[in-house]
Length: 280
Image (cartoon, rainbow, N blue to C red; front, side, top):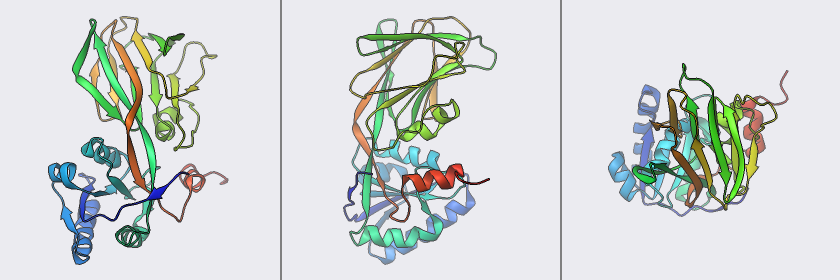
């Protein structure tokens, strides 16, 4: 996986899973450790967003995605410590947390870049200003529990792809290929690759399979049917209800997320550990 040296930080923000007492307690001890090394520690999210030169995440992938949204495009490395059971981006187990922090503070750590997607919602010929954002994992358009099957006109650049008839559609980054897209039978994509996955959710036509396209053109998805409640969800954390005729535009962002690498495990090791490959 492509990597580069991680700059030595002097201000480190700590973001932990809010609902976890263990993560909150760990954050306290991590802050003590960093201060003993002469590092300025930021625990306020607003300060972390503006001033942090590195962010330590204590939680799972959802907490890491939240931290990536906080830094809002700034090239701030993120060190993800896995406080749960299933985390593809939080590579560092708690047992290796302090050695990894030492590696960062002594200039021995490496970071890898992950692509993001920029999302625009166009309604009535206008761009909805409140929905112009970026995601690290995926963009999901899906029906509510009681809605009927939905139709989506989908194009890639100037090329019409198809009209999906399905429960929904997922557009994901390579990083997000191990998230919702995987549950929809999407492919696993090496996370440093440049590409985008388009995966229909429960398509009416079984030959409509997940598709991987280059990231140099926009993907446009138009909601064609009036099937009841249909929602646009961004990284599983925020969203909006769509109307018939709405167009969701997804394209590669110029911004990247920088993740501190765990030198003791590679991507395939993560897949073996998280997906239990090779076990009976």
